Length: 278
Image (cartoon, rainbow, N blue to C red; front, top):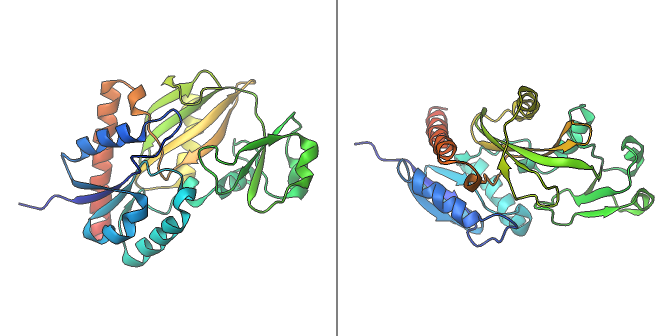
């Protein structure tokens, strides 16, 4: 009998996320994945010491990297040196690599909230009452502030991003395994980001989200495309989460949840098969 693949499942069960329960989601996921894999849970600070004993490292609800940046940087370096199989693969171009993608997508003309990181580019931003200022290494709204345009020139640029504050109708998220869309959720109240309801996307919505999935070009893994709907009806990218996207599985019905977990399980098997033969 062939041995079952072993997985080191990286999560911070104690992290207190506003409006989300990391603990419950990852307990559910591991309870289902355990049907196919031998699984051990691990805090992100301890991955380096344990990962050589497993067939793959699966990074899930591990919390904002900035809380353990030194350990995360060491993990990425060591994983590359040791040839560790990491799911999602560390080649992601979205949040996994920082916020540079918002600048790159803005420059390339993608439908993204316009983003700059240099004072000479302030003229590229549309006129609006206030602007969002956030650290490039930020996550989970940590360090986010809003200020009027006349104060932007006095900022110390280099490690910050500046975007217009968008008057949007609602936020919507699209959830993928590999390049397959599974479900969408939206927050009808802009002031309550994590009070989510099922959302039935149009073909145009799915074409919007697909552009960013195609741009990221991850062969395997879980991704979440976050967007906002402007007052004019346009969708703009807010975030391309490819590191540890919270899945809000408690907001979907049993059928969708089961289908998602089945797809994730199959994706992880394919990932292991592909990396063994590489």
